[in-house]
Image (cartoon, rainbow, N blue to C red):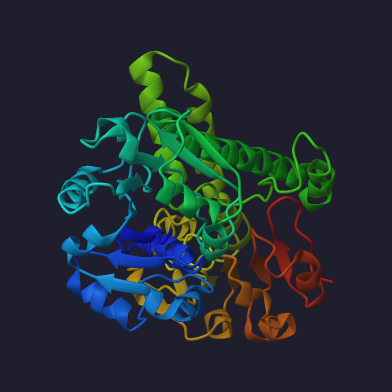
Length: 426
């Protein structure tokens, strides 16, 4: 049976998911209201940064097509609603655009086509949509910025929300999911919608443990990197656990889910205090680099020149949504900055005393201190001796161990990193 798949909404989620689906041998139609965006996509001018996405799109060839005409969806057997859901500064989702989009898509569906909501929505949303239950599904997405192609082509499992989890899935939809060769977990709509949130809460809990214990390591002379292998060999925790400390949660997705849980707890009289604690811990961790800068740099030099590597909220993306880097720089008014990021225009940051640097070493030139606020892989490739030679000062604030404390020490630098005390220069 030939199955044609449609994806509506060509933001990061929709584009990556559609490209991954097409790579499994399915004719895939990508639809978006924005005609200019569709024209860009037809020339492989991608609006998102994601490793390996360009190559996969090229390999798909004519099997992956783009259109701004919703009527073309009538030829599809399975249609995914897949735009990213915008959130505000409080983590609240704005579902008005998704609801309007679904309304337009429903007018174009063929009589037997299946509609699948792929973007993240709160519990109860899918069940309320005006479509027969045996044609309406919710599918949990678990893409990760920077690893989205891998997650889209080699998923660990499919979590599928249904009106009746005991009923077989429609044949076209079943064939599509089975092509990926992973477990399929049907459950009621609300369970699937809450599963995504539950996954992210477990991730936040792991990050909270790592950040809390890493800070203690810094004070007592321990090294968190030495402890992590012991935790990953414990079967109750596991080798894939999120145990790398960082500058708090960022990006928008985790914040949205925590806001949703707090809202649900308040509405239903359940205890959401643990979420408030996680958010407080995240805010504390976000300011780690700022605290180090104030204590190690500003206390000794009232007018330092500071190099900054990284503005995106994480590596391999140009998104700055809730970026810890930008949050740190916003609290450094009046500090002279030299900024570099491989994907984010440093000139768009808006810091009054900042200049954009063409290369990482340019950002470090004559700097009294260097702050590495996004762990881009290319920063780890910079020769540490060249870095030391470019800088005027000796202090490197490297929360993610991009350079590494030992390498910095050997080059005569003093490195501050999450999870261990600073090492003085050799």
